[in-house]
Length: 462
Image (cartoon, rainbow, N blue to C red; front, side, top):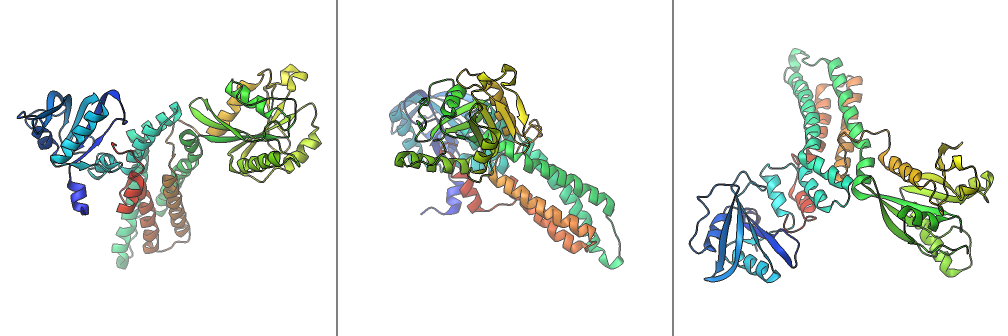
């Protein structure tokens, strides 16, 4: 069995492009022996005297048998992704060639990389902090313009810089408190408590903004679950089709046509909305429809946004309120969608209003696709939480959110302690807790189990 030291010091190799047939494939090698290993496959040619960040044509052999003609990209430490010597091999995309090259490199002294090990080494060698390393995985997984931009911002270090400023302010605060403790016998107060209280207020405001940004960040990164609910024949499936601009769901005048949930993804301005068309909510003796209603209730409880669709021509305000009161309890944001409004004044279609209970309402005519664009904009604004400035730093990682919340709790304890004029040693303990929780986000405070948990989610070649 390999010990931890051998695992971390070994030269590693992995396929960096997706497996399968393609015009080219890229194999990445990183570690102290990366260059000597490649030289051993080059039939007498050398790389060690070549400049970093250069490309080299080469023929690679194993036991004097040619494997492939390749292009080698050379990155010498510390100016590489991992901070180690790195060689990236662009070979022909045959799976057989890929396998032969990897086997030859392993035979020459490397081992297969673990999931995320290249990025883990970049973190260990100080090329990235932990939040930036996690952004690498998010960037690879990005499926929309919004999630791509969010991951790119975090990778570039804007989020890390914000956390660094918070940490620096706390360290300065802590140094003044610790200095007082050192001179406690002389009854000397080095810190202006009024100034420190203002500093704590600024830190609290920054933390609050970061924590609140998670609603937007989570929506951009993971999408928003939107359940389309309502009574049978209210036009839920017609609305789904109108939003998707295709006949995805069966539409019929017969109530109860939708017996199961139908799920599709809609992209609005870079944010994914997972639309879930549910069976109409009603009491029924039909066993299949009853199962559909039960699944609808489950989806309602899981949703982040509810579009409650009702027929504006057949449901009175009193009946609407009664129907709403019978909905399963949920923390989802609810939007009331009055459908079939083409029989009403055209000026009302697409207008967003607020009812007596503070809920947003919009009138549409789904069959004619009137008011659909306005409903999409309302969904988008709901996901963004219009009060938040999306140009600022945005938190999208649940682990980071928890770290920020624990930091905010420690800061609240410090603030209370200041108001109660607690001694410096008690304040210092809470400051250390705040610094600890901030450090867990960037990796200044970490442990091997945490790193393993984070990096095992990565693909092998990253």
